Length: 323
Length: 299
Image (tube, rainbow over all chains, first blue to last red):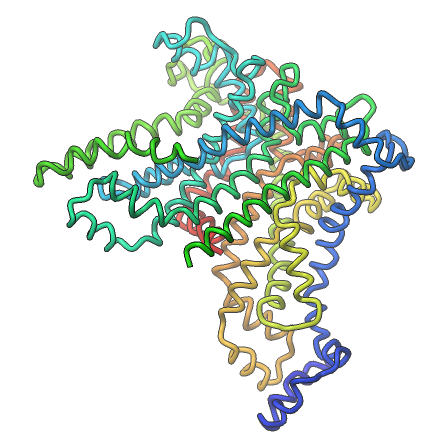
């Protein structure tokens, strides 16, 4: 604590003194004066360094190793893992499933949540906070437990099948999660149910930024609800659309908890997404392949970052066009 | 996304049709109509929770045998006793609580300290730190799980509570740090100068002046981290593969469905036990939950 008073010195004696001194404190002076800054950052340096930055880099190194799980360390094999991945049908199957999931689930979640937010935000909606709370409820629950619970609800003898059969929407019960034709769509449906509420909250926050006077003015001019939405609300929501889609895309790539507990990636890999492929290769195989799984993880990480970057550029482009 | 406006049209146009022509009575009818549609929608939305609660109190024969009836003939509380005592959900609950509390504390302390410095001080290397944060903001968990498991193993922390807490809270969580940084940046500069004149050092200023002022951010970070840690699955699963006593509720749940596959009523009771705490906290603090999540995104 002995150096603590030091930062106060320049401000103390006279303002002129501070002006003269401040422009050129050398690197080392600044470093010594700001010891406490680095003390405050120490937990982050250690934690973030060890648990985020190191794994980020280590994955790249692991990806170059042939490393059966039980061995202490792997042997360097260069780019062999990547070469094998590119011809591995199961890898491409997982990649295709992840992409398919993204393309179906994200528009449903983003669009469905916008629809609900518009209804809840309209002057026709009664008891808004109650409805908002009920729709938000699944968001706080544990994905892994939701996955297990829905294996029961969607079971051939469960309530969903009973209802669909009695309404004659289905001829005979289908075990949705355990059928290779419906397993991925089932994960999509449960995922959208689970997370729609949070996206709705994002949209409600976005709609709050639109001044109500604009809508009132439009109604004075006898614009219909549809015209008001199309020409006033929608253009103001475009920047939010890009950000909300980005958040939901990232969330859709992290569907592991729900998918693995609901379908386990099956049957016959029909709902195996990238994270399940990585997990299965690294931790569940009879001979775990840490190097091979890391190579898949690296490709998966690059894919995620490319998507985030593309959308980040999209956000910037929209902002520039608007200003 | 071009389909979004089309999807919106059918929902809003009936309301428009009813609301415009007759100036009186119209909007009221629209309100009733909208309310009914929302009520039906929400009833379907929360049905899985109601079904789960009812299933947890049924006999094994009733759970799939009684069609859509939600009312059990007799409340079978033994399902809960079985899940809690025999399957071990009492232990899983304790593990989940310990791990969640540890993770929340770790993230709050770590990100408040870093956020204070990043929000208020200027120092060599600040831009570099922010750049690393932005690059790793969207890092998927599946990407880092293998090296993190190896690291934890080397530290001798695999199969310990501390190992799971560090795995969940030591890295990542950039959003929490940025929330603190944004908040501290918005506070007036005079605060520290006054304290400094009184002879307080940086640590004293932080803990006695700044941190107490940041209660709103701390509440947000606590809520977000509580959800994050309580609902975590991949990391606790991998870290406790060889140590069943350390399972959290989420991991215990899937182990239960694997080991006692056909005890559906016990499974439903276990699910209620696991979801009840998080739902109770949410219902008690719903305003703060919703504001936290909306606020975190606006940042």
